Amino acid sequence: MGIALLAGAPAARGQGSTAQTQFDYGLAEMEAGRFASGCPALAESYRIDPHPGVLFTLAECENKWGKIASAFTHYEAYIDLFAHMSDEQKAHQRGRDRIAAAQRDALRPLLPQLAIALPAGAPAGTAVTRDGDPLGAPSLGVAFPVDPGEHVIVAKTPDGVRHETRVTLERGQRRNVVLDLSATPIPTPTTTTTATPTATPTPNPVRTWAWIAGGIGLAGIAVGSIAGAVVMSDASTIHSQCQSDQSCTSSGLSAASQSRTFGVISDVGFAVGGAGLVTSLVLFLLPGPKPVVPVASAQPHGGFVGLRATW
Image 1 (cartoon, rainbow, N blue to C red):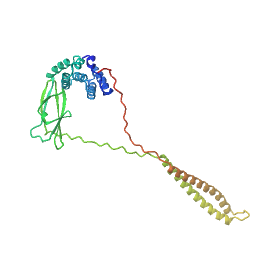
Image 2: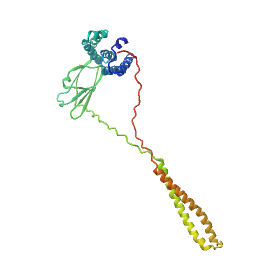
Image 3: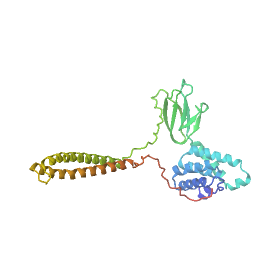
Image 4: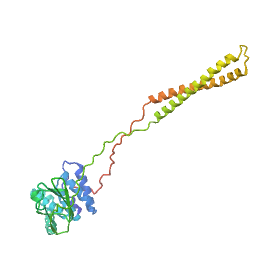
């Protein structure tokens, strides 16, 4: 099928570039043989802005992909749309109706047929799905065309127990499946709750240094106080062992020398202690860092790049 016939449908109406972008991308992927990405893009383009030409192209893509039941359904849908077009609209389709009818007729004998039924005595209200699509009671026991390959059938009884059956069909094969509700049930998937991100405490180095400065300040005050007590004790000895003419006994001279040394120590201790306490107070008053809160971020993905075509 040539690209011109596939792409030559009327331009998009009203839905903007999204449908056109999906169509261009899907058509390019289809022409490259990447049907698993091309066909879903064409289906999305048709969902956004349904045009007969896009539906026809989707059927062609699915046919090449091997999804012959899906292709058969979309060929029939296209033929039905064509039957309701005006003569002018039909002229724009350039023979797609004949191709769609020929493809549909060729696929009909190749379609796998699958009939699904519940066993006798199945609990009332048992729900059945095939590949995620629900099957109502009128659909049970009726053979429907399906794509070749594996199909997953799930029966869920009213008590919430799930029974899963997998069936694989080839082209042209017909299967009648009666679900076995006595088999080992499958646990019903549980919904996991994502915890709300909470603030993570951030270590505060400023507060740590405040404690260190406070400790140094208290130590300085303690040293200054002890040294001051020694100075005061030496002052008593000096007063009793030294005369007014500056003559002192050996005990008085030793006390005077020690008093001068411990006086310096006392002054330095009180100076360091005061500075440490003031620094600690200032650091405690500074604001700490904000807590870190995890935030999910969206990573941009590249846009579709494909053949530009009028559809």
